[in-house]
Length: 264
Length: 348
Image (cartoon, rainbow over all chains, first blue to last red; front, side):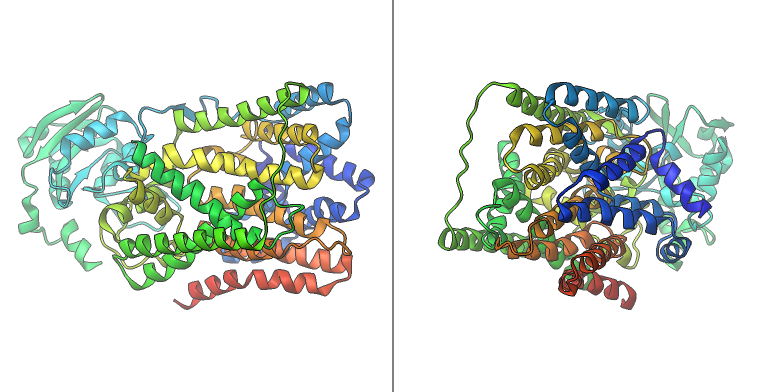
């Protein structure tokens, strides 16, 4: 029960829409004369709401899909019930009623388009321009060709949304702690923020990367050019290195990524 | 540019509307409206896509062109059938709209502006969502390689079919829109599809308003205004329907929460708000409810359980309160596609 209450609280977050919803249900319970509507807008949502808090139901749901129990609350017609009750409450006094209700909604909720969630779109893809410039710099000209490029973790989500010609030595599946993931030395190095140049070059070769991109946030220890990485350009805070030893396709390291890929 | 826009208008507006005429022919003229027809058609279009794409995905690894070809053919056939059945079966209902600048009109203008505001924000703002690294990339992969769920979107390596995700074909639908319009699927997802989906969600809510307030335009407008404000100010947590609608408009989960589930709620209103003695025909709504189950499966595999639960709660509650077990049985029948998808998921 405590867990479902926590989920309910997390769902309602910073707003008071749940209180508005409960108030709307109570109001309709006592005032709605249409018995069919009372069934659909009061009884059914109440049953769903009660079901949500039943511990056995919670346990059964978790056996099917863990971590998404809040979605049961999507079944409640919260928006429609609140809006309908509000229209009923304001009755004929429409002008004042609408203004007042809009004010209540504004005070009960959280404005969606604040800087916390959204930023100005930089292009029609809605991915950072830096990613597009980096991809354009390294992607193969032939549209059927594929190359591996090591991107800093904060960019990997975007790369393949722009072009699938670039393959990644590690992706989001390496980054989410709760997911089952294979060990990835390159990701471990990137996520530590400390990149010894020799090790970076070796990993890049083991993971078949034609290019390695490093952010200013990451500290490179040593000079990568001494280990076969050639600086070939920069975009904003990112530096692009070409890995001249990347023709590993023809000479795979026995414990390298090439072997792991085909073993899978 | 014009050709691309035209292709999308035909696929997302004209054809669904024509398809919607098919179930609408089996709904009483008294309650039939243009917004109702469009929502009906959109749901049927989604359902048809799921019916075609899942078998092809399972059987043909690089079957994306087959999905495009078959789906276009089936869509056109259904649209033609809709036009024919509607014209021969029942005459269209024309509703007189009298434009008069008054308080009512002002309210509707505010409603329109608030919806337009959300559409503009969808196009002009971007939000980060990690799931796009899976879903949007699957769309790009399907459109550019024809491969269906056989490449790991995160890295690009080959893999066996990802059945769990393959059963929910919204990413392939986005890829389909990309193929027919010639626009990159990421642009379709992030900058275009919301232009249709956001107004569509409000069309569903308008349908609610029509059931609740009939032709009382002022109260319908007030209802719509409250709904749109609850969306704009609904970012109370990352879990709510409204947050999903605003930040992940293009994802199946958002379509499930904001389109499928609210459409089911509206259909329930249409079906069960009327008196038992009423002779208003609603057979078309049952057809749409059946297709809603299929469209739900298209949006998310989790929908199999969620929609079945929703139907079960409605069915049992209504059957007990109205003392009519047939209601529960009829609603159970509409869940057959969900059971079938659940079985495929378990068996394959």
